[in-house]
Structures are given as C-alpha cells and as structure tokens.
Length: 226
Length: 338
Image 1 (cartoon, chains in turn blue, yellow):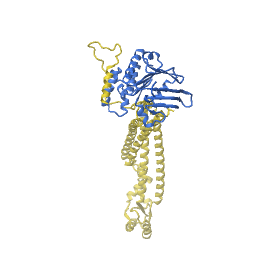
Image 2 (tube, one colour):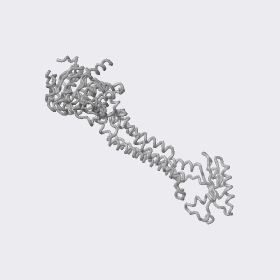
Image 3 (cartoon, helix red, strand yellow):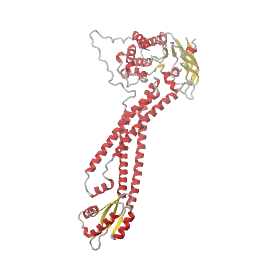
Image 4 (cartoon, helix red, strand yellow):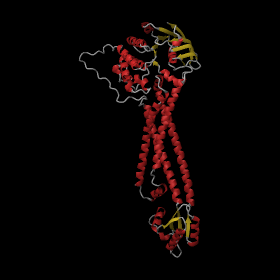
C-alpha cells in the first residue's frame, strides 16, 4: 500500500461526468508512488482515456479529491496549471506530432516553447532520438515516418523535459508485436531511471511481458491488482 | 543540473534501441544520404495553408478597396476646403458697359475705389480675352463680343476680416455701373454640397472599413479553424497561454501586413497612375470645367497617410482576432475539463 503523503498523484473517491451525462468514473481511489510502474486497463469505453485526461489536468473531477504533486486539481491556480503539466509527460494515442515540424523539432518542442535556446538542448534531443532509434530520421517530417516511428517520436517528445511521471495512452495500439516489445523495454528503462510510468492499454500480451501493478477499470469502477 | 544531464545522457546511450532487421549495411556500401536539417527552424505556427492564402488574397482586396475609399474622401475633403478658401478669399466686381462706351474708365475707377478700402489685397481687371475664355464653354470660340453686353470683371483678393459692406457701399456711391458679387450664394451652395459629399464619403468609408473588418475577422477565424490541433498540442506539452497567443498573433500580424501591404501598395500605385494621367488631360472645355471643380484628381499626402493607416489598422485587426481566437480556444480547452 502506498503512503498517500509520498505519492505524486492521489485519487480519493473521484467521480467524473461529461456535462449532464452519467458518471464515466465512479469512486476511483488510488495513488501513484514516485518511480512506480502501472498499467491502466479495461475494456473499450471503461474510462481509461478519461482517467489519463484527469491525470494531466485536461479534465477536472466532478467530485472527490485529485491531488497532483500535492496540489488539489480542483483549486489549482490557472497560472500553475502549465508548470504542473510540464512535470508530466504525455504520449497520445494518435501521436499528435506537428506535421510542419521535423522529428527533431517535434521532440524539442516542449523545450522550445519554454524559450530555451536550441544550442542548449541540441545534444540532448539528438541523443534521445538515437535512443529511440530515430537518429537517422531526425530531419524528416512526420508524413514519412511509419506508425511505430511516430510513436517513438511522440515518446521522445514526452521524455525530453525529463518528466516525473509519464502517461502513455495505448502506446502499442498502432505497432506490430516486435515493436511493441521494444517500446515496452523503453518504458521499463525509463522507469528504472526514476520516472513513474502509467500505461493505458487493453493489450493483455503487453502486460504479461512485464509484471506490474494493474489498475483495472470496469464501467467506471476501479479495481487494483498489485 | 550538469551532473544529472550527464548521467541521463550516459544512461540513454547505453540502452540504444537496435535498428530494424535488414538495415545493416554491407562493407563498402555507401551510406544513404540523410535528409538535411532546414536552414531555418520551422515556425511553431504552420506557415502555409490554403485558408491562409485565401485570407492573404482577401485582405489584399479589402485593403485595396478601403485605401481607395480613404483616397476618395481625402480628395473630396481637400477640394471642399479649397472651394471654401478660394471663394472666401475672392470677390468679384462687375462693371456693366457704359452707355457712353468708356467702360475702361469705369473699370479703372472701380479698381481705385476697391484698393482704397482696408483689407483689399489686390484688384485686377480681367482682360476681355480672358473673359472671352470664361464664356467659351457656353458660347464657343467664335462668338462676337460686341453683340453681347458682357460686363467687365475685376477679381478682388481680400484679407480675412475685410470690410466687404464698405466696398459695396462705396462702389454703389462712386461707380454707378459697378456691383459687387461676394459669392455668398455660391459659398452657401458649395459649402452645403461639400458637406453632403464629405458626409457621404465618410459614410461610404465607414461602411467599407466595417465590411473590411468583418471580412478580415471571419476569414482569420476561418484560417485558424485548422489550428486547433496545434494549439492543443502546444497547450498539453506545457506551453504558457501567453506564448501560444503571442506566436499566433505574430504570425497573423505578418500575414496581415503582407496582405494589407499588397492592397495598400496597389492603391498607392493607382493613385500615382491617376496623378500622371491627370497631368496629361486634354484641354477641352468639359475637362477644364471638371478640373476647375475637382482639381486634377491627384491624391495628396493625407490620402497616402490614410492608406498607410488603413494597412496598419487592417493588419492590427487580423493580429488581434488571431490572439482572441487562440485565447478563446485555450479557455475552451481548460473549461472542457468541466
């Protein structure tokens, strides 16, 4: 059991509904410890993506308590939202790479928007792209990347600011099994470097390859398998 | 920080992901040429889209039309001012032909009287040849002046505050055949016509500017409709709202300056062309009348300044609309959180 005071993220009886619709998440309670690794799983429509959106402050809970890095998501000041978000890396299911930027520029984007000089991050970005196997695709545009390469570029973009927690939404949904294994290995290595990792997936094969805590969503309710 | 970075770099180098099978090169095989990095970093805001090219064209057209309206109002305004000034600075003494035939003596007398009145700057008789030229548009070149009792005219230039009533009274007393036309009737008519034209011009200018602003606002919002994805990504990777808004504002300001600049330059070119053509206008009586009434249709400095202001205002409207649209999109992204 995780001590709530040590957790980077804490959910307590969190409920979420869109507009006046039914609750898509009900009484969700769990904590994410620093340096932990967990899967969020469940059937399609169970609320995995909604849970991830809560985790990176794209949504706010309609009830309950959600604390991210000790700050209450319901009362967090608007000017603190972005600085909190920068401590979280997010890998979207559909990659969300900007088509008019090269792979290098896409990966460097989180640093560039902070006004950082390119000279100060050029080496880090190059090394990270080498690490994810895209060193030779540094100056190509996303249109010529395969699905797996786009996925790795999206992961590199999420990692470049060395976030404390990495969220990945179906990171293996668009890749073949060998590449899925390589991506999983990448996440595991990243976790060993100290980053908390949350992977939303319904790929049972992926979860069987690396044993980790599973947060299982079923019709908005959460069950935890440690 | 340096230590952490070094440790990070060493660590990530040690776990390089292997290349795909089949990518290994045979000994001696040439390395494939890799794509080169762009000479300049790509801008954050996508630079070229069909909607933005359409916006550029629309802004150029609307800006051109707005500049023409500004120039038209400027010409009318200048002419109206000139009419008032010219008429207010000049009165005319008419001397009917003398029954004894010595009209020249009467004219000389009237000039003397006029010059004695305080505030009169000059009194110059209009020669018979010049008077004939004034009548040419109505009577033609070959009319016989002796057949018509045409009065002789004296153009009198006056200083502001000159005693016109005293001049009229003395002429009446000392030169019986002379009468004074102080142009008050013309002045009233021209003044009211100038006012009407000015109001009409300003109303048209206002309509054109409002239409330009509306077109530009809606076209800018349309051109930005495809930007939501980019704004979302920037937002979710942690870009500050002010940064995103600034980037879009700068991008659309440049686009607006380009579009409105093209329209403004075309308008300025057409002003210059009109001015050049006006210099070579013919000398038919009709053209002479038009020139007298409207001048040479040459756009003066206020017209060019107005066009420049139109360009800047149009670009400003685009930049502000872009910023507003981005800010609204970012607010929607936050508020969608429920």
